[in-house]
Amino acid sequence: MSLEQSVATVLERQTDRFYGKYRGLVLINVDPQNQGRIKAVVPEVLGIIPTNFCLPCTPYAGTLAGLFTVPMIGTGVWIEFEAGDVNRPIWTGCWWGTAQVPINELGLPSQFTSKVLRTDTGLMISLDDAVQSITFKDLAGSNTMSMQLGMVLVQGKAFMVLDAPLIFHGQAAIHPAVLGDQLLLYLNQMVLMFNTHVHPGELALGILPVVPVPPLPQMLPATPALISFKNFVE
Image 1 (cartoon, rainbow, N blue to C red):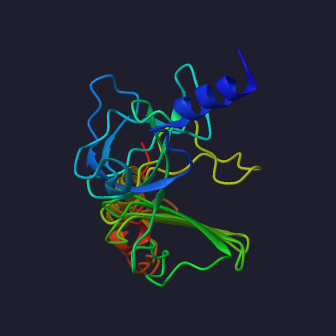
Image 2 (image 1 turned 180 degrees about the vertical axis):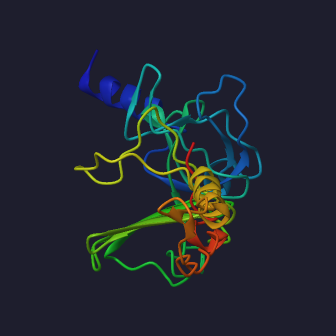
């Protein structure tokens, strides 16, 4: 084959090949093979005709391992074509439109010092190098966990549950927790016994009554104010 023929063959192969990235919009994000594939509309290449299923270009993948994120319908995506072949599309990432960048945990625009992962419903993980903080929160901010400046703060809208065979509050914890309601019952039983206790009368020389000792003031019963109704143990 002559040089001219070789060049002609190469040029022919390059016909209808598309290299580089093209802007697209997600049209279908439900993959019957559950591989994270999508179909997109790429006007610059295919007009209004949707692509075939685009394989994801993920930063990490393995057998039952990897980062699995699928963009919602209408999301802006970058589309490439393997070897330039429009029949082998790849979605390699996403792009934001105006005012679409996710806000941080304070409801403010994210800055270059922060790394924010926010889902479409508002679940968020925010890492801020500027203040050395890590925050997990839901859309309403009712349930949060944050770590900042040596403090870990966990807040729950209704309640929080710590469940394990053994729970230690502090590395040197050795003392068992008290069951407050049982202790309250026991203390009130002791108070009742003390307040109702009567010594039998005594006689001097067996015939003369002894002047009784003035009665002590009665002990007050233990009240629920002694125990917490926010912290419970099993």
